[in-house]
Every structure is written in C-alpha cells, then in structure tokens.
Length: 80
Image 1: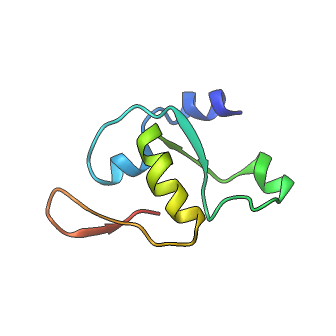
Image 2 (image 1 turned 90 degrees about the vertical axis):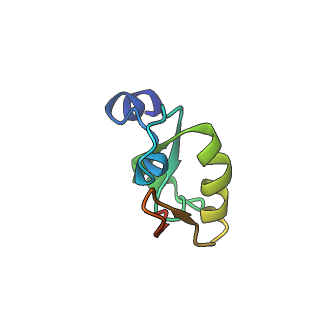
C-alpha cells in the first residue's frame, strides 16, 4: 500500500504546503492517525511525507498538537 500511495503522490504533502518540493519517502495516517483502528490503518486517509516531516510534524500531530509553519509570504500555515 505504501508503494502504491507514494507512486500516486510522490511529493511531501507538508513541504508542498510551504511551497517546497521534496520527494516523499513515507506515508502518514492523516486525521490524527489510526489509534488502533484496523480498518483505518489499512484504508486511510493517508498523506505522503518526507522523512523529516514525518519525524517532526507527524509525531506532533499524533500527540494532538497543532503544527504551524510559515509560508514564503511570511504568513502562518497550519499543517494539516
């Protein structure tokens, strides 16, 4: 499933929100993760991420924190 998702969505979702083009190497469970739900684990929703974003933004979101970055225009962007 990971390879299929990355082949359809090859760029990091969170980097793209900041107008940065980065190859995605990992798949993250969107909407707060699966939290043990087997159906959600296999069916998603998923987003493609680079290793750096998955290690930082992904873990913060899984812990229930809002993550804010800044776009090229200097305005804050909530990474969802």
